[in-house]
Image (cartoon, rainbow, N blue to C red):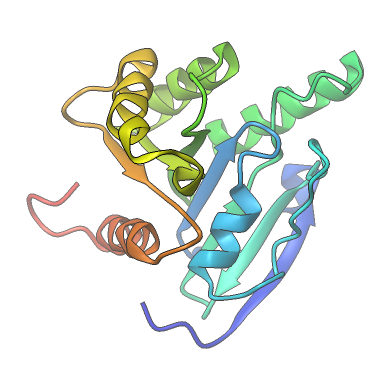
Length: 200
């Protein structure tokens, strides 16, 4: 995909603040510090458009990134951060449910999991949530460059099995050190944005 203009439309905390546009949206969900901001920056060929932090739980808003007025990439707040208060966790849950259940512009939510670790109970819950709202589950396994070669296949198999993925689902290995995963994600977005017969 050729990208010319990218901008942060809004960092929203309620559905009243969501962009008033009809362009399709693709959202990225995952645990705090799993690499959502890094993935978005990689997809958009930008170094720091999406804020990257070594501190888990940094993103507490829903961030809408406008790509050439054709799509929004949406960075959802990370889950599973233990230091959040009960009220913050409840607020997060309400924000996520409002967006996932009622946002008509949302084409697909993509789940990110850390390839180095077994998916957590929160990852499994989010996977089930995505399956409820979408026809299929798309998972991006981040930080693949941190794995030894002998770990890659068993780790991807573990993610597949723990999340209960099926033949209709998609698992994409991703690393910031090359562009293969980036192109795969863009190919999926392009096909889902304007599906032809037999596609997705």
